[in-house]
Image: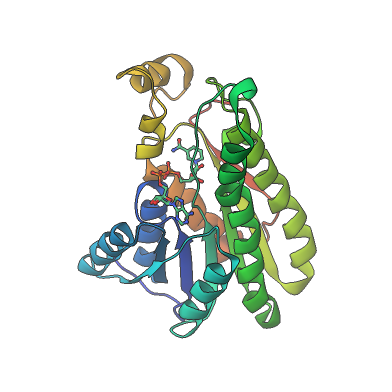
Length: 252
Ligand SMILES: NC(=O)c1ccc[n+]([C@@H]2O[C@H](COP(=O)([O-])OP(=O)(O)OC[C@H]3O[C@@H](n4cnc5c(N)ncnc54)[C@H](O)[C@@H]3O)[C@@H](O)[C@H]2O)c1
Protein backbone atom coordinates (compact mmCIF):
# COMPACT_ATOMS: atom_id res chain seq x y z
CA UNK A 1 0.00 0.00 0.00
CA UNK A 2 1.34 3.44 -0.88
CA UNK A 3 0.88 6.21 1.64
CA UNK A 4 2.22 9.77 1.53
CA UNK A 5 2.04 11.63 4.84
CA UNK A 6 4.48 14.50 4.21
CA UNK A 7 5.90 16.61 1.42
CA UNK A 8 7.62 14.08 -0.87
CA UNK A 9 11.38 13.95 -0.50
CA UNK A 10 13.88 12.67 -3.01
CA UNK A 11 15.71 9.46 -2.11
CA UNK A 12 18.76 8.27 -4.01
CA UNK A 13 19.69 4.59 -3.69
CA UNK A 14 23.05 3.61 -5.18
CA UNK A 15 23.27 0.07 -6.49
CA UNK A 16 19.48 0.03 -6.44
CA UNK A 17 19.05 -2.21 -9.47
CA UNK A 18 18.96 -5.48 -7.57
CA UNK A 19 19.35 -7.17 -4.19
CA UNK A 20 19.26 -5.06 -1.05
CA UNK A 21 19.30 -1.75 -2.96
CA UNK A 22 16.26 -2.73 -4.98
CA UNK A 23 14.32 -3.69 -1.85
CA UNK A 24 15.33 -0.39 -0.21
CA UNK A 25 14.17 1.58 -3.25
CA UNK A 26 10.78 -0.20 -3.20
CA UNK A 27 10.35 0.34 0.55
CA UNK A 28 11.15 4.05 0.39
CA UNK A 29 8.81 4.50 -2.58
CA UNK A 30 6.05 2.73 -0.64
CA UNK A 31 6.22 5.38 2.07
CA UNK A 32 6.03 8.14 -0.51
CA UNK A 33 9.61 9.08 -1.30
CA UNK A 34 10.42 10.07 -4.86
CA UNK A 35 13.00 7.38 -5.49
CA UNK A 36 16.00 7.52 -7.80
CA UNK A 37 17.50 4.14 -8.53
CA UNK A 38 21.16 4.62 -9.45
CA UNK A 39 23.14 1.69 -10.77
CA UNK A 40 26.18 1.03 -12.93
CA UNK A 41 23.93 -1.54 -14.62
CA UNK A 42 21.40 0.89 -16.07
CA UNK A 43 19.12 -1.85 -17.41
CA UNK A 44 18.66 -3.21 -13.87
CA UNK A 45 17.98 0.32 -12.56
CA UNK A 46 15.31 0.73 -15.23
CA UNK A 47 13.71 -2.60 -14.32
CA UNK A 48 13.67 -1.70 -10.62
CA UNK A 49 12.19 1.74 -11.29
CA UNK A 50 9.56 0.29 -13.61
CA UNK A 51 8.59 -2.25 -10.92
CA UNK A 52 8.11 0.53 -8.38
CA UNK A 53 6.02 2.58 -10.81
CA UNK A 54 3.81 -0.38 -11.64
CA UNK A 55 3.17 -0.79 -7.88
CA UNK A 56 2.05 2.85 -7.68
CA UNK A 57 5.24 4.58 -6.52
CA UNK A 58 7.34 7.30 -8.12
CA UNK A 59 10.74 6.13 -9.32
CA UNK A 60 13.37 7.19 -11.81
CA UNK A 61 16.37 5.26 -13.11
CA UNK A 62 19.84 6.77 -13.24
CA UNK A 63 23.02 5.47 -14.78
CA UNK A 64 25.46 5.86 -11.89
CA UNK A 65 28.93 4.52 -11.27
CA UNK A 66 29.85 5.43 -7.69
CA UNK A 67 33.54 5.18 -8.57
CA UNK A 68 33.09 8.59 -10.22
CA UNK A 69 32.85 11.57 -7.88
CA UNK A 70 31.46 13.63 -10.78
CA UNK A 71 28.75 11.02 -11.42
CA UNK A 72 27.71 11.10 -7.77
CA UNK A 73 27.38 14.90 -7.93
CA UNK A 74 25.40 14.66 -11.17
CA UNK A 75 23.06 12.05 -9.65
CA UNK A 76 22.36 14.28 -6.66
CA UNK A 77 21.73 17.20 -9.04
CA UNK A 78 19.30 15.05 -11.05
CA UNK A 79 17.32 14.27 -7.89
CA UNK A 80 17.25 17.91 -6.84
CA UNK A 81 15.63 18.90 -10.13
CA UNK A 82 12.60 16.82 -9.13
CA UNK A 83 12.53 16.87 -5.31
CA UNK A 84 14.86 17.96 -2.51
CA UNK A 85 17.23 15.14 -1.62
CA UNK A 86 16.08 13.96 1.80
CA UNK A 87 17.56 10.47 1.85
CA UNK A 88 20.82 9.13 0.48
CA UNK A 89 21.43 5.39 0.68
CA UNK A 90 25.02 4.43 -0.13
CA UNK A 91 24.38 0.79 -0.93
CA UNK A 92 26.51 -0.06 -3.99
CA UNK A 93 29.19 -2.57 -3.11
CA UNK A 94 30.78 -5.82 -4.16
CA UNK A 95 32.99 -8.50 -2.68
CA UNK A 96 35.47 -11.21 -3.47
CA UNK A 97 36.86 -14.02 -1.37
CA UNK A 98 40.64 -14.24 -1.56
CA UNK A 99 43.28 -15.03 1.04
CA UNK A 100 45.29 -12.06 2.28
CA UNK A 101 48.47 -13.35 0.67
CA UNK A 102 46.85 -13.43 -2.78
CA UNK A 103 45.08 -10.06 -2.94
CA UNK A 104 46.71 -7.92 -5.64
CA UNK A 105 46.98 -4.14 -5.29
CA UNK A 106 44.71 -3.81 -8.33
CA UNK A 107 41.94 -5.96 -6.82
CA UNK A 108 42.27 -4.15 -3.49
CA UNK A 109 41.96 -0.74 -5.17
CA UNK A 110 39.01 -1.90 -7.29
CA UNK A 111 37.15 -3.02 -4.18
CA UNK A 112 37.88 0.14 -2.20
CA UNK A 113 36.88 2.32 -5.16
CA UNK A 114 33.29 1.14 -4.78
CA UNK A 115 32.93 0.01 -1.17
CA UNK A 116 34.77 2.86 0.53
CA UNK A 117 35.55 5.69 -1.88
CA UNK A 118 32.08 5.43 -3.45
CA UNK A 119 30.46 5.67 -0.02
CA UNK A 120 32.74 8.50 1.17
CA UNK A 121 32.00 10.68 -1.85
CA UNK A 122 28.35 9.65 -1.79
CA UNK A 123 28.14 11.02 1.75
CA UNK A 124 29.93 14.17 0.64
CA UNK A 125 27.70 14.74 -2.42
CA UNK A 126 24.54 14.33 -0.34
CA UNK A 127 25.81 16.49 2.52
CA UNK A 128 26.56 19.33 0.10
CA UNK A 129 22.86 19.79 -0.62
CA UNK A 130 21.47 18.64 2.74
CA UNK A 131 23.57 20.81 5.07
CA UNK A 132 22.43 24.20 3.71
CA UNK A 133 18.81 23.06 4.21
CA UNK A 134 19.63 21.62 7.65
CA UNK A 135 17.67 18.50 6.72
CA UNK A 136 18.54 15.06 5.47
CA UNK A 137 19.44 11.54 6.37
CA UNK A 138 22.22 9.38 5.00
CA UNK A 139 22.31 5.60 5.43
CA UNK A 140 25.38 3.57 4.47
CA UNK A 141 25.56 -0.18 3.95
CA UNK A 142 28.17 -1.63 6.26
CA UNK A 143 28.09 -5.32 7.24
CA UNK A 144 28.60 -7.62 10.19
CA UNK A 145 32.06 -7.79 8.56
CA UNK A 146 32.63 -4.39 10.14
CA UNK A 147 32.56 -6.14 13.53
CA UNK A 148 33.92 -9.62 12.97
CA UNK A 149 35.90 -11.37 10.23
CA UNK A 150 33.94 -13.19 7.52
CA UNK A 151 34.03 -16.97 7.75
CA UNK A 152 35.60 -17.23 4.27
CA UNK A 153 38.79 -15.26 3.59
CA UNK A 154 37.55 -11.78 2.75
CA UNK A 155 40.02 -9.52 4.48
CA UNK A 156 39.81 -6.79 1.84
CA UNK A 157 36.00 -6.72 2.01
CA UNK A 158 35.98 -6.83 5.81
CA UNK A 159 38.44 -3.91 5.84
CA UNK A 160 36.21 -1.88 3.52
CA UNK A 161 33.16 -2.44 5.73
CA UNK A 162 35.06 -1.61 8.91
CA UNK A 163 36.00 1.65 7.24
CA UNK A 164 32.39 2.35 6.27
CA UNK A 165 31.43 1.89 9.92
CA UNK A 166 33.99 4.48 11.04
CA UNK A 167 33.13 6.81 8.16
CA UNK A 168 29.51 6.69 9.33
CA UNK A 169 30.39 7.53 12.93
CA UNK A 170 32.82 10.32 12.04
CA UNK A 171 30.53 11.88 9.42
CA UNK A 172 27.60 11.72 11.84
CA UNK A 173 29.54 13.70 14.42
CA UNK A 174 30.66 16.29 11.90
CA UNK A 175 27.30 16.75 10.19
CA UNK A 176 25.07 16.67 13.30
CA UNK A 177 25.38 20.42 13.95
CA UNK A 178 24.18 20.96 10.37
CA UNK A 179 21.05 18.90 11.07
CA UNK A 180 22.06 15.98 8.87
CA UNK A 181 21.96 12.44 10.31
CA UNK A 182 24.30 9.66 9.19
CA UNK A 183 23.71 6.03 10.13
CA UNK A 184 24.53 2.60 8.78
CA UNK A 185 22.94 -0.79 8.54
CA UNK A 186 25.11 -3.85 9.09
CA UNK A 187 23.45 -6.88 7.52
CA UNK A 188 24.51 -10.43 8.24
CA UNK A 189 24.08 -12.98 5.47
CA UNK A 190 21.39 -11.86 3.08
CA UNK A 191 20.12 -13.96 0.21
CA UNK A 192 21.24 -11.94 -2.83
CA UNK A 193 23.19 -12.51 -6.05
CA UNK A 194 26.28 -11.11 -4.30
CA UNK A 195 26.09 -13.68 -1.52
CA UNK A 196 25.46 -16.57 -3.92
CA UNK A 197 28.41 -15.50 -6.10
CA UNK A 198 30.72 -16.09 -3.13
CA UNK A 199 29.63 -19.67 -2.47
CA UNK A 200 31.81 -22.58 -3.37
CA UNK A 201 29.08 -25.20 -3.03
CA UNK A 202 25.33 -25.07 -3.69
CA UNK A 203 23.41 -25.46 -0.45
CA UNK A 204 26.23 -23.88 1.61
CA UNK A 205 24.07 -20.86 2.32
CA UNK A 206 21.14 -22.84 3.68
CA UNK A 207 23.55 -24.92 5.80
CA UNK A 208 24.98 -21.74 7.27
CA UNK A 209 21.52 -20.46 8.04
CA UNK A 210 20.49 -23.60 9.89
CA UNK A 211 23.73 -23.94 11.85
CA UNK A 212 25.02 -20.47 12.58
CA UNK A 213 22.20 -17.93 12.51
CA UNK A 214 20.26 -18.01 15.78
CA UNK A 215 17.00 -16.98 14.12
CA UNK A 216 17.50 -19.95 11.79
CA UNK A 217 17.16 -18.28 8.42
CA UNK A 218 19.03 -16.08 6.00
CA UNK A 219 18.21 -12.40 5.91
CA UNK A 220 16.04 -11.11 3.09
CA UNK A 221 16.65 -7.84 1.24
CA UNK A 222 13.34 -6.69 2.74
CA UNK A 223 14.65 -7.24 6.31
CA UNK A 224 17.46 -4.80 5.54
CA UNK A 225 15.15 -2.37 3.75
CA UNK A 226 12.99 -2.04 6.88
CA UNK A 227 16.05 -0.99 8.89
CA UNK A 228 17.06 1.56 6.24
CA UNK A 229 13.50 2.90 6.17
CA UNK A 230 13.51 3.37 9.95
CA UNK A 231 16.90 5.08 10.11
CA UNK A 232 15.98 7.43 7.28
CA UNK A 233 12.57 8.31 8.73
CA UNK A 234 11.49 11.02 11.14
CA UNK A 235 10.91 8.22 13.69
CA UNK A 236 14.72 8.11 13.98
CA UNK A 237 15.13 11.89 14.22
CA UNK A 238 17.29 11.53 17.40
CA UNK A 239 19.42 8.70 16.01
CA UNK A 240 22.74 9.48 14.38
CA UNK A 241 26.11 7.73 14.22
CA UNK A 242 24.39 4.40 14.81
CA UNK A 243 25.21 1.13 13.07
CA UNK A 244 22.10 -1.04 13.16
CA UNK A 245 22.95 -4.75 12.95
CA UNK A 246 20.39 -6.82 11.04
CA UNK A 247 21.77 -10.34 11.24
CA UNK A 248 19.31 -12.77 12.81
CA UNK A 249 21.53 -12.86 15.89
CA UNK A 250 24.76 -13.85 14.05
CA UNK A 251 26.94 -11.53 16.15
CA UNK A 252 25.44 -12.57 19.46
N1 LIG B 1 24.23 -9.74 0.65
C1 LIG B 1 24.72 -9.73 1.88
O1 LIG B 1 24.73 -10.76 2.58
C2 LIG B 1 25.31 -8.47 2.44
C3 LIG B 1 25.71 -8.47 3.78
C4 LIG B 1 26.25 -7.33 4.32
C5 LIG B 1 26.39 -6.18 3.56
N2 LIG B 1 25.99 -6.20 2.26
C6 LIG B 1 26.17 -4.97 1.49
O2 LIG B 1 24.94 -4.55 0.97
C7 LIG B 1 25.15 -3.87 -0.28
C8 LIG B 1 24.29 -4.52 -1.36
O3 LIG B 1 24.62 -5.89 -1.45
P1 LIG B 1 23.78 -6.93 -2.33
O4 LIG B 1 23.96 -8.24 -1.69
O5 LIG B 1 22.41 -6.41 -2.59
O6 LIG B 1 24.65 -6.92 -3.68
P2 LIG B 1 24.23 -7.23 -5.20
O7 LIG B 1 25.50 -7.61 -5.90
O8 LIG B 1 23.09 -8.17 -5.26
O9 LIG B 1 23.76 -5.80 -5.73
C9 LIG B 1 24.68 -4.74 -5.79
C10 LIG B 1 24.21 -3.71 -6.79
O10 LIG B 1 25.21 -2.66 -6.82
C11 LIG B 1 25.50 -2.34 -8.18
N3 LIG B 1 26.84 -1.81 -8.29
C12 LIG B 1 28.02 -2.48 -8.20
N4 LIG B 1 29.05 -1.65 -8.42
C13 LIG B 1 28.53 -0.41 -8.63
C14 LIG B 1 29.08 0.86 -8.91
N5 LIG B 1 30.39 1.02 -9.07
N6 LIG B 1 28.24 1.91 -9.03
C15 LIG B 1 26.91 1.74 -8.90
N7 LIG B 1 26.32 0.56 -8.69
C16 LIG B 1 27.12 -0.50 -8.54
C17 LIG B 1 25.32 -3.65 -8.92
O11 LIG B 1 25.11 -3.45 -10.32
C18 LIG B 1 24.11 -4.24 -8.22
O12 LIG B 1 22.88 -3.80 -8.80
C19 LIG B 1 26.65 -3.96 -0.54
O13 LIG B 1 27.29 -2.79 -0.09
C20 LIG B 1 27.08 -5.15 0.29
O14 LIG B 1 28.44 -5.11 0.64
C21 LIG B 1 25.45 -7.31 1.69
